[in-house]
Length: 125
Image (cartoon, rainbow, N blue to C red; front, side, top):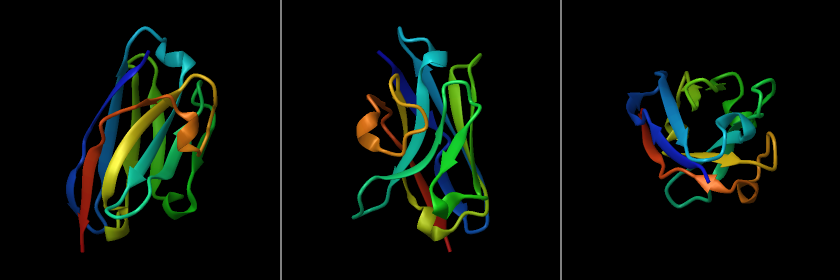
């Protein structure tokens, strides 16, 4: 079992930055789960944003965030981060942290067993 709690969302102007954090807890060791960030804009399906492998040695991004977003993890703090730079109104969404024990670096929401409650990110133009 893994519980995930996101924080760091808010309102930012276009071109600005935010850093999301997701703290994990539970019986499953943090180092044994791979993690991802997904987002869901109003009226749209949930979409993949970024993923990081168990060790953090590999990261994956959807094309629209490459070069602007960075996913990282601190296994000592049971935390995964999403640094978002040069943000645009198209980044406005609820951002969800997700964890999986079985897949590493996956972009498919269905392959993640555990989800946080989400944090709202709004980018104004």
